[in-house]
Length: 563
Image 1 (cartoon, rainbow, N blue to C red):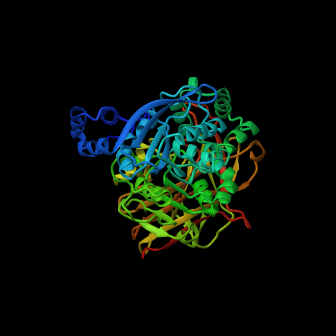
Image 2: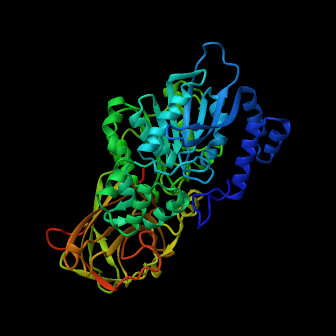
Image 3: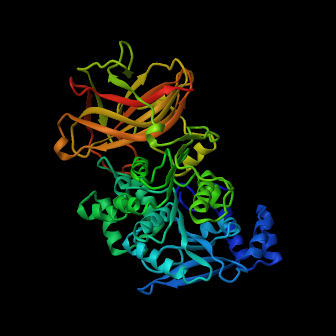
């Protein structure tokens, strides 16, 4: 596939991908030799010739109760015997300009597996009318009406219906399953567990991701409620309305319902996900008591499943086919039953494939690194196993970053990671005026990080709304290069200005292999464009980073020798 989007539109397909999807659509509508032959350009002709023999495709609009028309693509098996029934899968669209048509390359595989397939674009998205509600109660009600229409299709087995979705479609699928017991299984890629923590982490707005999503939604197509929330987030007015808006759109809110119905739920995410909170996905998965599976891979939002959405091999979609087959009785997968566990790739090896029964089994015991002052003659602080108190390191908050950022480009930085090209920083170029740096000794053997990381640090900010961003890096002393492992932000309130405040940060979890001789390096920065608006005027102030007696500053890393 071509690169997914540009720096300006990171969630949109490129021209070549759009041409391929449109050619697939035309071949589905008109399975003539000419249309199917055109797909030879991408090596797809045989698949769609077979599809035309076993299934029939059509496009339609389904009217909702309020008159809103949802754009739908429907695939039904040909030549069903009288009384024969088959499983069905519903695919709500990802947040992309072509809506549910992003799933069209998956139709042949699902049709060969014996499924009725109904893909639709949620209200306000792509060619559907109405306003965008962001997987709110109206979208859930729409999903129920879509199911009502699906049940009227001849041959659909009402007891074998599942949902699959990517990103926005994953959230829609999960939230619909919480309210409609007819949904017997869900597979969601690049899903979210808690929308609030994805928007607002430790008092810090994820503004770059938020604005990219708003741009893709199109504010003029958003509901009045959503537009009001957009303005409140922009003005940093995080009130009860914003919290309520996010809460009713968070699968974790409905945990009791999933556990009561024991709905089988497969979710996937990425280690460097910049849109939705990975810890929230992990927590949600952990608290489910029904059949469940979790996959976390290298990359950023939507990266790992891209080939699968294009009809090629990808772990997320292969797992989804197995999941749906097992719970609905289809045969789109490879015949291998799914595993109900936690599956991971480690950075940066795409061929890695680790399995653990639970998140607790995956997570290694933590090794505590204390933050201490610089050794004599050195400029950077240290990460050591013994605490040392009474030191202070002062940095400036100027509105300029240190040179380290969460992701230089949304989505695309993660894509580069998936092809073995993680972004490289130079430790010598880190601006120590605006960041405190703490470095561990070189590793005496290869090590692995697996699980949750936590940072406790005491900071005295001069002003309110001052931010810190903690990054953990892998550094190579031989070359001076560094790669990001994980991160977390924190913003201080007015009550904390001028006060020494001890904060406990849960960093993004990680699965990372460190070669012998590498060093862990913690950077505590005061700015990152991912969390702020460009050209924002920031008063220059200072932050004192300390380690008081009794509340020593430390970093807990789940670390063990590489087997």
